[in-house]
Image 1 (cartoon, rainbow, N blue to C red):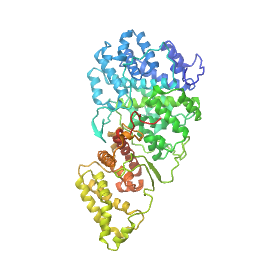
Image 2 (cartoon, helix red, strand yellow):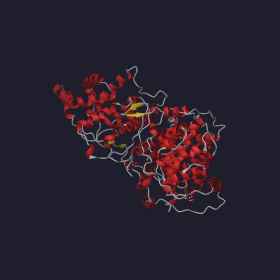
Image 3 (tube, rainbow, N blue to C red):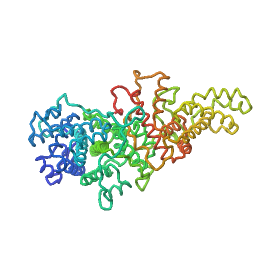
Image 4 (tube, helix red, strand yellow):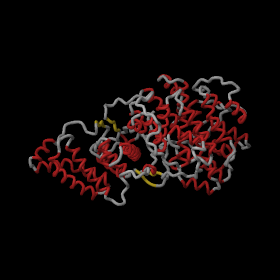
Length: 627
C-alpha cells in the first residue's frame, strides 16, 4: 500500500484525462499524489514535454533510456512501467532483459548503446561527465537537440524513481524482477575529470551545448525567473534549444518551489541545499545558499546546513525533515513506512510529507540537468529578493552566543587544524601565556624574546607555508615577522593575545609576498567568479573510526598537504578564519575584499578541504550524511 492516503479527483481532472489518453490508464505514481493536485498538473506537463512530445529522439530511444536507468536504480515500479511501454512499442522480453543486464547484447544500434552509456554515466557517476562525453555522442551522430533530450530524459528518470520510492507507488502491472546482475547506482561517485583540486579531480564547468538568445521581454519563462529570482539561472539558459521544456520547468518551479501553503519556502530551499550538497553539486549549493540568505537566514547558518545540517542548530522537526530528504535521495530503496511515520510524529502533515518527497525528486532532476549540461554558477546577484527578513519560518536561529561560530574540522592535534572549537569575535578565549615574556622583552630582556621565538616559530612557519606554498617564502617571512614584532612590541597593548598579534604580522608578510608574485592566482575579486572551476564531490559529516585514526604527525602532514593544494584565494581564507581565528571583518580587511566575498571563499575552501580529507575521516560504508 502507498505510504500516503489518496483523495478522489474525479474523471474530469485534466491531468488524469491526459494520462489516460496517452497511456491507456492513470499510473499509480500520479494517483499517489492526489493530496496535491497542482503537483500532478506540473508533473504531467513535464512528462508530456520531455517524454511524449516528438523530438530529436524517438519514443523507443527514450523508453530504453528510462528502462536502463530505472534498472540501475533498482526501481521496480519504473522498470515495470517502462518494460510494459517497450513491449507495446514492439520490443521482445529477451531484448528488454538484456537492456537491464548488458545493453551491448541487446541488439541495439551502436549509437543507441552510446546513448544508454551516457545516460547511465550521468545518473551513476554524474561528477565524471565532461565535454568528452558530449563530443562522443556527437561522433555517433546525435545532434545538440538530441543530446539535450538525453540529459532531460535522464533527469526525468531520476525524478520519477525518487517519487516512486518515496511514495511506495504500487506497480501498474505484474512487477518485473530486476536481474541481480543489473548495475546499481551508488551516489555520489567520482569520475575522471579535467584538473586536480584538493587531491581529487574536477571538471572545469562550461556549457556543453549551444544556447539560443531569448529575450526576457519576449520569452515569458525568462521574465518569470527574473521577476522571482532577480536573474535568469544559467541552468535554464542552457536549455533554450527547447523553449517548450524551459516553459514546463518554469511551471514546475512556480508550482512546487515558490508556493508556501504547505511547506514553507525556507524548508524547501533547505531540502534543495542539503540534497544538492550530498549530490556534490556546487552550482545548486551556491544558488540555494544564496536563496536562503535572501530569505533572511544568516550566511553562516546556510553554509553550515550545506556542510552538515545536523550541526546547524535546526529544530528537531527540521532536522528530521532533512534527514528524510537525504535518505530518499541517497538510499531510496531503504525508505519505508517507518520514515513516514517518523515525520508524522514530528508534526508534519501528509501534504507536507508529499511535498518534501516531490522537492527531493525535483532536486535530483535539477542536479542531473546541471551536471549533464555543464552550466556555470550564477554569482552575479548578491540579493535575490527585494525584502530580507530576520525571522525564518520553521527554522529557528541556532543557539550560539552572538559572534560565535562553530567550525567542524577533522581532529589534528598539534597540526594546522584543531578539533571543533568555538570562536567569539575572532579571539580565542583564555589567558595569554606569553604576557610575562612580553613584559620582559619591553624591559630589554633579549632572552625573553628568544623564548617567544622558540614558542611560536614552528606555528608561524606553518602559517606562512600554508599561505605562500613555498618553503623559501615561509622561511624569509618568518624571520621578517619576528623582526617586525621585535621592532613594534612597544605598540602591543594586549587587546588580543601576543600570539594573535604576532600571527597578524606574519599573515601580512605572507599576503605581501603573494601579491608580489606576477603569475600568482588573484587575491582580489576582478569581476570574475573564481569559483566556476570547482564542483565539490564529498560534502560529508566526519565520523570517528578507530581503523582510520592517524598519529598526530601523520594527521598534521595529511591536513597540511590538503591545505596546500587549495587554490590560493580559498587557502588564505581558510587559514585566516579557521587556523588563525581572525574575525570575518578582520580577515576581509587583511585581504582587501568585502565580507560577502570572504564568506563565499571560506565556504568553498572548507568544502574543498573537507573533500580532500573525507576518505580519511569518514567511516566505512557511510554515506554522504548521517540519516
